[in-house]
Length: 308
Image (tube, rainbow, N blue to C red; front, top):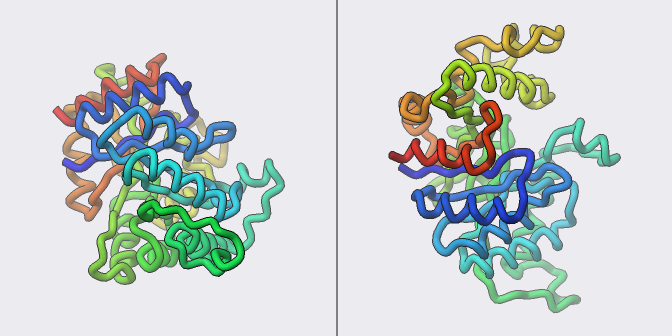
């Protein structure tokens, strides 16, 4: 079973990053990815994990394109690619407007911004940029894989056209199938990864896991991009309740929770995970959230059980 995981979304220490990456590799996960929430750098975290491991794929989930010039993003990713001896996966995203607004970032046309960024970044990575005629910045390192986030069919098509994989998050199975179809129509026969980002709340205390899942999913569902997708997918009532201030414990329906997350005992989550593969996902990527006072390593201990 090909399965990826992320480190905790709110970040953790360098010591914990090393331990998490080593344990993920030993357990047999295909890849481990770092989220990027200021003041944690996804690429910096990937570098740490690359140095601590030997075989597991290392990546970002995802790097904010508005916070780095393409040339420096390429330079940093190339360094991780070299350190990891070819295991780097650079996940790119636009982040969210509320986050970018804090830093005075004008996102402009997000589709065109992503297109322009990927084209420039790849040209720096593979040596095809016109800048090489003026500045000697070529590095003899194999090109790393590039995945991009996508929650619209148009952006999924962009991923299929320009990237090596797509990284949607918090999308139901029906919507994911639409995204995969759009990406595949542009990717053709080339090697392409269909990931599915899934928030995970694992614990033998099922009641506590369900409570944590409702709160966690409810908080994320109010992000503008997620609200649009969930509404178009038939979960508009859930969104309206959240917007009205109804607590997530009451607003989030069982159907929404089952479509978007894994929760409860690891052994009880396998059927939900199998549904992702049956739906076309080639690499589900699990994002752990704490149930109660779970530490990063305790969350990892629960994730490992999914592979048993």
